[in-house]
Length: 277
Image (cartoon, rainbow, N blue to C red):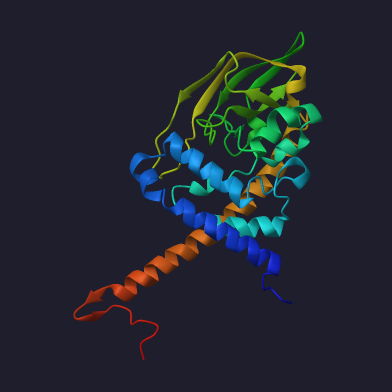
């Protein structure tokens, strides 16, 4: 079996490496200031659009790059070389948004693909971390829609996103259901932004939902389909995380090798140059 990359995959890797090299110049600023200013976000967004690597997991007919899973992994492995999670600035809409109705797609997904909006996924709760079936956030039917009440933790990109995909127990049946919720909806409060040992270009805030009304057409997918859609999202995201760790490990190895070649102790390099005899 031939495991070498195809010509197309090599081309994508080269494009992703060029984009990675461009974003690398923002690493120190992100590290020193725990994030980047708006101007940097704009510059990187424009570079992503120029590269054609926006929304690699969405079809071309919607404006995405339309890459296969293997092609996405090839791109993510290169982006993983970036520190401060700057790879996340090369946006991949949550694959849950592929369940949008045509109307929802035009309002939410297409603007995300174009870099005009940003989504975040609100699943984790104080008592429901690795067990989403213990969720306490509820969605109660009311005239014309639903009312959400609850709390969500560790909502990655929640500080930057302008709408949320919220998992809640819907109705008396407590059917796990996803809702598309604009972040500026009355009753949503970003209550805390925890501090972390790592540097991340975005934050992982906590949110509370108090009598948050959303219309009937805010349901993403079908009532009761929330776990299945979320499980698919988890599966794809975990795979891309694995790809990025490979890129991070490769860069770490390269930096360690270069440092070892240049480092001298007791009058000689601690590691001979590969070109030396």
